[in-house]
Image (cartoon, rainbow, N blue to C red; front, side, top):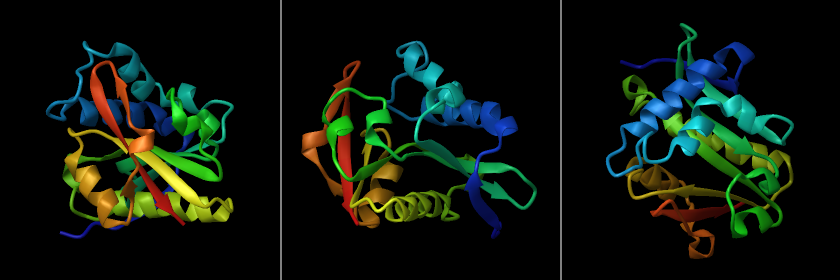
Length: 173
């Protein structure tokens, strides 16, 4: 069954649903820290409107014709706002992607790719030359999506968070 969807910026009334869906998706990943293991991270996920406040950050969502959230992503227009320690915040001429998720019901419909392409277009629109992101071993579907779209591993952006290895990727535009 093909479902039509649009990609747009999130509406204020959708933040709670977005955050709960995002946290729910991440908590289901095998090998990913649980809410109990990393409560601060899950607080960020469920309160994404606080994370983006007063920053060059946009939340993009995929929405069905029935106005159901099917997925979303956080686009970081200025890496100083990326929200992790390390080299990423010092990368020049770059934007970033964080917190990509697609609902279980909508997987396989091209939503992750459409959201990522929207971020790539926003990077071009800003005149930046690259886009960076991070993923983990628990996020193999995202890893496959990104490499299939031309993102390359960037070991210089790798870091460890609460014992979890986090892997950097970059796409030159």
